Amino acid sequence: MSETETGTETLETLETRPIETEKAGAVLEAATAEEAPVEESDSIFKDKKHYPIFPTGLFDFELGGEELEKVGDSFSELNELGTKNGSDKPNWITSIDMQNLGRLESLSSVLRQAIEENLGFTGVIYDELQITSMRAWRITKSELFPVESRPNQLLAGIFFAKTNKDARVTFFDPRPQAWVIKPPVSEPNIFNSDAFSISCVKNRLLVFPAWLQYQISFKEDMEENIYVTWTAMIRGGATKK
Image 1 (cartoon, rainbow, N blue to C red):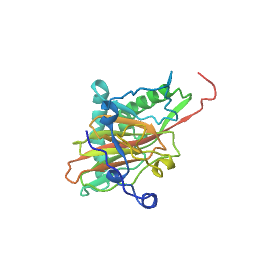
Image 2: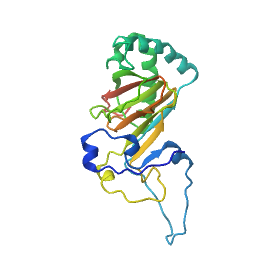
Image 3: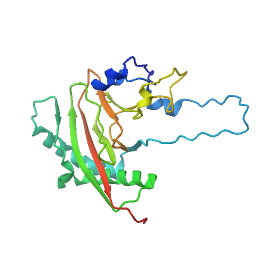
Image 4: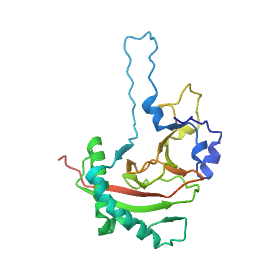
């Protein structure tokens, strides 16, 4: 488990340049939420309830078996698309419309399945689901990437096709007040941290609200990392099915 680091940046600094993950306030490691025990102290109250209202859902899928075989055929296609931008570059990004390529249908179908499970869990009613953008990234040289969000879409996601675990993706609390008043805490958890960090693991597929800000960071010494980002939107749904 990594130690949580307390940021020293001012709000003005954060607004004028990309947020550096290691200095973005209380960055909560994914393992913290899973392993930290909940301590119950004595209370004078007869009953207590806690409602984690206004949640931000981060869905984590791990591909395996038949699904992994489907997307395996797409990896060579991603490399071919990327080299069109120049194979001599340490980092490259494909065009943003890969969802329209029939040869990547196996990858698109897996993404659609994850999106459908996300929408089913949240009870969203819709008539048609559409992947509105898809692009691949190949990173072999560490650099500071800007904080990203897609507020004009419903959902967004990241699929890690190749990684040596030298990368992390950090999600930032979208509430402005979370970055203004930050009292000291005894131990960070999902209810008092303003950022949440998770490892980039091969075959991991993340789905989250498109408006949620995130940033992917890499170590100085790293190997090849290939991942796919995408967005999705729905249509219809006025009548409950």
